[in-house]
Image (tube, rainbow, N blue to C red; front, side, top):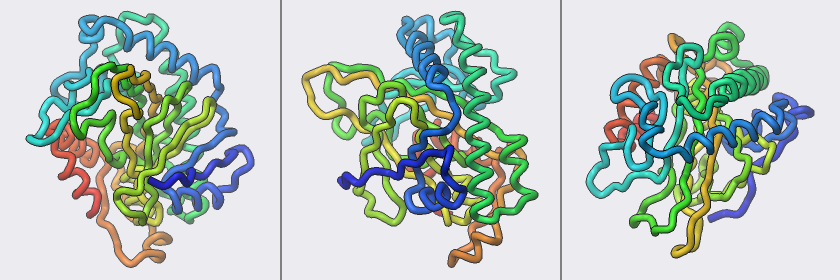
Length: 315
């Protein structure tokens, strides 16, 4: 495993070219100067931990529905990854997830302040992710007529991943979150108390070249996803990442909690590789319909067939 750290930038003084080059080289970057208050990140972390610490029966009242979009609470071992292929083991993560936040109807009764805190965070994160898209579009000369679907009408998804503290050893090959790329355009990740485990793989490096990432308090970790990779014709690659278990068996592993914001263009957008990016590469990727892409990927994950998803992102 390489110990080389990912790029770190101050977004308040970073140019579009500097940010975009970091994403081209790494598909991820740590940023300060992003404008999201530390207090809001801490409120999100605190209220979400309060929810995850509730009895499982109470959390089950807002369980993610069996059909349709991923929304609500998904417990460890179950939820959208109930079905596990022979020879595979489930990930050690639970989450609460909100899409279409204005009409979302699975808010828990406790903690009462969860809804207003998440609503405030949703708007702040949406503003930052749209800002990042604008910067990338400027640097890569992406079509102006395409940008509004990303910045004025985006489809967004806010989640918190909770990796509970555990005393028992994981099963052979079991991790907190299996290797994958995000299906969106831009992902924002925050952690008020990062206990380690997040690892990324830089584009064009061996499959076993995982690099650890610690997210300092107040920083935002930006990762690029499948849809931005399609729009840029893989001038910017989707970021491969995973969350592994902390070292040391026989002692309790600490809780890890990540605030995650997924940013897509509008649901009905057909994403076509930008001419400016096609000119820089030797292949031309096919168009992608955002809504169909989301539904297909969530159905694949629900079936437990991550290999099919990873294969699909190659085309």
